[in-house]
Image (tube, rainbow, N blue to C red; front, side, top):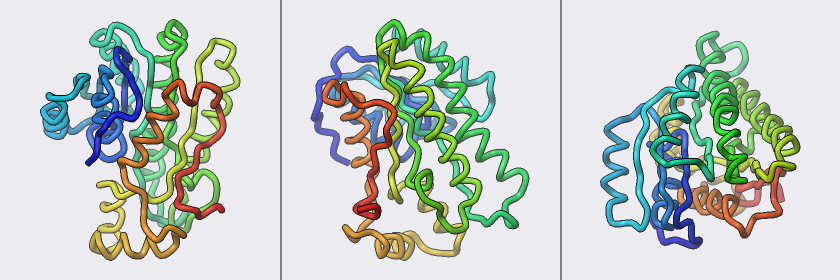
Length: 258
């Protein structure tokens, strides 16, 4: 994984949910490489220790706050503890998410509720808790949505519904908080080679390489996105280079919507 800094985030204070895997992990290491002080949150303590170890020689730092954003009270605690570690907050990246590959009839109540609790409710609660701190810094929120927020996808009813909600929630918040100097940007990747995507392939009875080949066939650039490519866009959207961007989705789909 390349973590060469393309931007200077020296002194910036960053909280990343879902920071122990996939896009969140890649974003955390990229921010740390660019000098930021980062707190990652998630449920995987072993992965967090590995990420912290991998960041030791970087210009910035990485710390960990455990917690499940599917639980409302945990969201407030995650933000409070992160702000305590960092001494404030400049950037929030909401990367935590779950996916269930199922049609409406196949989707269980438990799958529907988990998808909404993590992908929508948890993101909302984290944003709500972070906004007072971001007002002070005139900071930025980057919400990871999906290309499934823009068009439908087969066998992903709950996921599409949740990511559509994420996109609209982000747009509304961007309008509400622009006067306070807070930018709130949705990023909409297509398929990204992450443990979550590989887990989805496994649920469908595909091995990882077969699943990646199948996904790549639908992409004009003939491959799926990497977690590092999402991280690169997260850093851009968080930086002063994107200072006039808020509310509108940044799409990373290899040409699918060209």
